[in-house]
Image 1 (tube, rainbow, N blue to C red):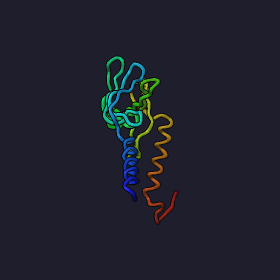
Image 2: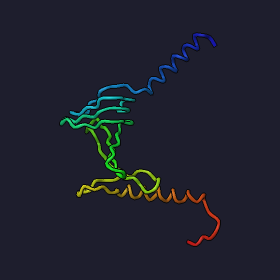
Image 3: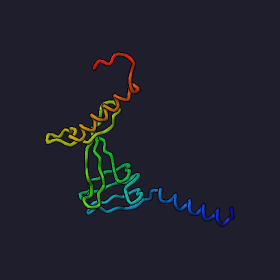
Image 4: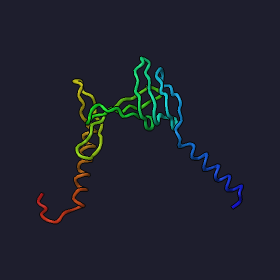
Length: 143
């Protein structure tokens, strides 16, 4: 391979890899701003989202989302949106190792699974239960 061709391939690989790096920038969301690491136009890495009233969310962002721990079993998912500033949803940890599921804050200030969250958690529990026996076990099959 010629040195020129090697140089061009190296240059191409170098510039292609630059698209995966995060860089520091400021993003505006109406009267709110995000300052910090940005990747592919979204908050990604360490950064601070500041509302017009001065309140802030500070931490590690992934693809424009921030997970704010409320307690051991509940978290708020904050998604940055160029039109509205932020979109906030909630999740509740499922039983065992099944994951996190969509929830909502009730009028009394507690959190409970949405209909979709309940359905998704039930499906995940069934999948977890059916995978734990190795696809079938020897012995009685009494229903």
